[in-house]
Length: 110
Length: 117
Image (cartoon, rainbow over all chains, first blue to last red; front, side, top):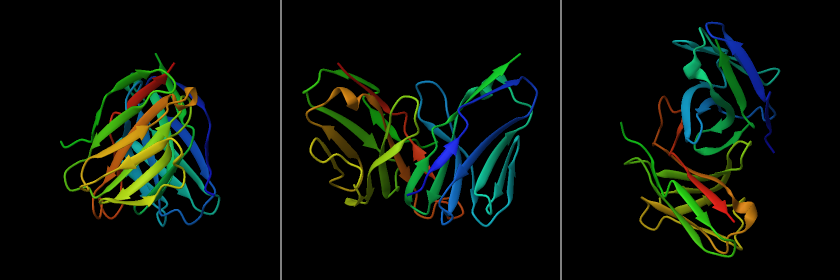
């Protein structure tokens, strides 16, 4: 079955860029998503990319997809303390179930 | 902005007791999902509904878990009897027909955090 893997922890300085990486195994995944989860809260959809795209930019967020290597990344420009959260990569889409990674905890320090 | 509603937000129960969680989807969202998120892990799908019909319940422990969506709107997830290993966050998500640009994005509720003692 589908497997999604992420690094577990990332620490960055406020104002720097953050890059969170994700790999997945099922090349038939239609969409790839990035969700954000703050402590005690549900998941907030940040952005998604269709599998035939290479890049998507949305304000401070840039998603890069390398379909050949099944590698997805999320870049957050000018990282702020309010960006501290857990970020989940998920694969699936088209009303099918999502397969989530274990999440990357982003810590932003002054 | 419309949101997925869940209740209760927190539930503490003793093992062997019965618990129930409720989800009210965004109006018009026909597809509804229940996920379980164990601390430190990503969410895993328990059951998926399309309107009132179950589409996927392959990961639902059917000896103790049940889910229903009788009128194709709100949904209830029940555990009976609860076990210590059921302690987790239970998340409900819904999807609009067509999604945004056909993305079928899932919108999540705030979750119910269950603690089994």
